[in-house]
Length: 127
View 1 (tube, helix red, strand yellow):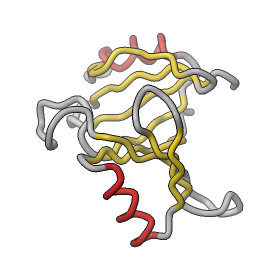
View 2 (cartoon, rainbow, N blue to C red):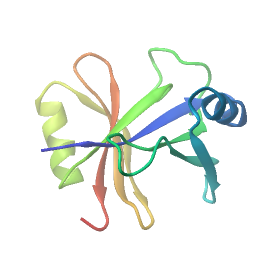
View 3 (tube, rainbow, N blue to C red):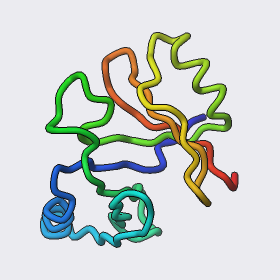
View 4 (cartoon, rainbow, N blue to C red):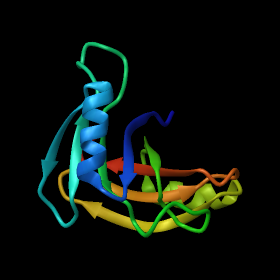
């Protein structure tokens, strides 16, 4: 069973978005190093139900229906990214961004479901 394990908030101005979510919801955001500006977000304590996520610079311009990723994205843990790449099109969806290796995290790809919603699928490095 695939479980939502992470979300991303894509923003034109990540610093502004961090201030917004910290101010409105009390989230804690920590910038991490890497090839893109990326803030890991803690939304609450680990003893409560919920997931944590991230804020990053939007890929492209303002949101539109022809962009692969533009706003909120949920990431679902999968056993095999290759199997997900096969089953999504068979079920009527499509892969919108190619698979990428994220060091010490796993292999990630983005897909669109039959309703046009974007989601990430992550095969963790350490299952």
